[in-house]
Length: 313
Length: 184
Image 1 (cartoon, each protein chain N blue to C red):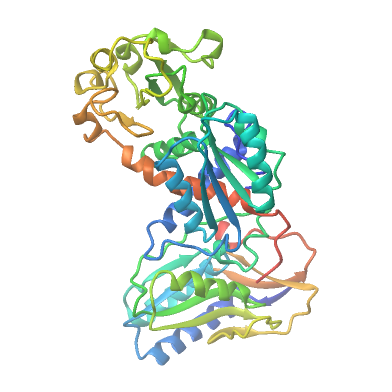
Image 2: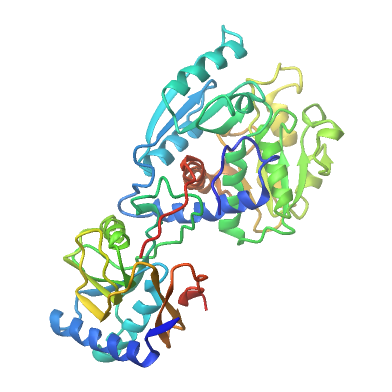
């Protein structure tokens, strides 16, 4: 295990580092089950949550992760509507640098925002979602959650990622990571929401749900992001639900013990039917719990100054 | 490399320590043994064996990992290896015997105390170790010791072997690290 300089995306993350995060997260999952869910490890370190896009669960997950490690956590929400992104980010970079943040967790609607920030600040930068690019901690927590249910070796598992693939940073990060871990990743959605062939990451692409779900070990449903769609890519949410929503009938094509995942927040009755979301296949709430452990591992591996440990006995 | 304690001496010493624990606690009703990862685990397991033999029933056993509680945790992350802690028993109200292989600066024990207290408020915590080599940097002392020895600062004490056959050896600090007993 070694420490991370930044966590910007899965594509540039060394596979050994990805495994080291997943393994470190196991120790932190245990911390979450104790009577006192806090360890003193990052006492005196500062974590800044810099969110240019509204987010409740990712922000609170990072906040809880930082607090369970005893770091000081500052939440900065920036409404980025009026200023152009370059100006805002540059100003914010300078402000944060003078605050001496050890880790900056950034979410931004512009792809590449985390990369822009890295190298312009002294602290480590963790990408909490940048535009339509990547959401690395979501992919790591999804892989962690699958490992909880299917063991550490994910080799050969069939994972169907379904929904708005083209606009989804969750789909991209997950497809890259799960393929590296040996999964057989399929992408499925309406043709208007599928990636161009060169952007499909060498995954088989389906324009119907049923063939993608055939024999699947995991059905990973994506949220229909109404805020990113112009409203012209499919007729109505109701029609989307009828053709691309995951319901009990469609789930029967998958393996009997298929895991159903969703990064949240769920559009109930759109991409996933109520009885599937609340049914025995759903591990959505495990994903939330894993999120804190994985983010603790990421903050822990990013926050140190890397000097060698002192001998002790 | 010279041997400080052979397998027989370790066995006799830990059997004596087991007897002392039973005597001091007048039985083992509320006693639980917790090894400090990773070196304390094989020592704790052998101690448990002797305690079980004396009492004729299994004694609660657990382990703590102190990585997250080190006083240099935030600066010493170059090579972090966090292991799982496993504390299956009720800590509140228990008489805990904390076990490590070698007692040196006392910093590991300090961290282990903090880790343990996050699981509850034990009635007492005592410390047992195989070798007390001196050189304390914190006011921490062991309650049960198999061997006290003054070891020079340029030397290191390693506990090696299997859980059944442990020995303590002294070698120069720059000698290559032997795999910990737990992994063999």
